[in-house]
Amino acid sequence: MESQPQPTAATGRAPADPAATVETVFRIESPRVIAAVTRIVRDVGIAEELAQDALVAALEQWPRDGVPDNPGAWLTAAAKHRAVDLIRRRENYARKLAEIGRTLETTAPPEEPSDPDDIDDDLLRLVFTTCHPVLSPEARIALTLRLLGGLTTPEIARAFLVPEPTVAQRIVRAKRTLATKNVGFEVPYGPDREARLGSVLDVIYLIFNEGYAATAGDDWLRPALCEDALRLARVLSGLMPKEPEVHALTSLLEFQASRAAARTGPSGEPILLKDQNRRRWNRMLVARGITALSRADATATGAPGPYALQAAIAACHAHAYSYEETDWRTIATLYGLLAARSPSPVVELNRAVAVSMADGPEPALEIVDAIAAEPALREYHLLPSVRGDLLRRLGRTAQARAEFERAAALTRNEREREMLLKRAAGDES
Image (cartoon, rainbow, N blue to C red):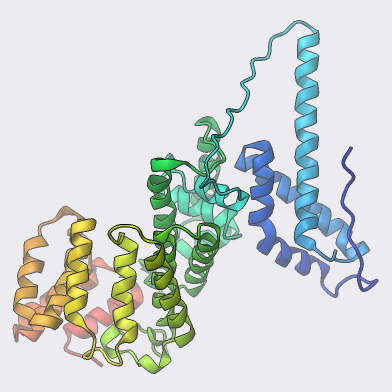
């Protein structure tokens, strides 16, 4: 039988706060532990429970024996040990049933096809599992943050301003759905990979966006969510180095994250892009964004994907020394390509903003009015916000005020509501 892993006490004494050390290590290492165990038990719910068992063992042993030299490997080995014991118990039970003449139907797992592009990485398999299309978008986000982001249920609930029981139910139901639907713990092959990869990238993008411009609550930014999403994107880039859209998403998030310090004022109030102090943009993140975009270009074999186009737009902003010096015509062209590649009224709204800077507010207002009746924009506060800005630039002040007030009524974010009401009152400071 596989022996229980034992820690190595390098210092000969326990750390000052062993429980905190264990919890910190577990938060960092838990995604890989869960991924490694899921490959054995083929059930993310059971794998998480076994990982938690390993955490309990660490809390018992590390304070006494010292933190091991490789704590991540220790946790993984401990969880795997429990997984092997579980499988052996199941096999013994099956044999006993057979001995008394009962039939237990079993289905051997299908052999995975041999594929030269197969990526043999448990963590990557876990990403594709938590982001499986069989789950709702909300469930994918919650499960991904739980298993890959290392967030607790209360942390996820606070991040998205929803009750803890709601998040807990989403996670439980997601695990149950994956089990009942027999979702394979695998990276899909061929055409299925591209379709499934889109779901993975969308989940990471949604997590980042919720941190970048919170849809509700008292805070405009939630930096921790942005950091979690960016970390996931970077991990995915390392796991899938030949996928251009993975690098493109990473590039986009690096560029967007670079502006974080300039996006809020001293009291946490939002600062619009045109008013941001670009000297506060993080140039290291900008450089990382440029590098990731270069990788996306180098690995692309056809037309750029939606994240590559969005990253190229973000790069235009990053290269400009001021809002006015931005290459708005190129941005408008890129948004046109994005609208053709992934039609969306929101993309058209963004294109209108770029057109307004390149050609003036009148042609931009025509674009906005053309999409104003779209059902997807009916409750979207940025539509009246953009329209109000265009109307103000055209001198139609009363109409602009009404649009800003409408936008303020639609948003669920308190900081954004305050800003929009100031704009309605003509206070652009």
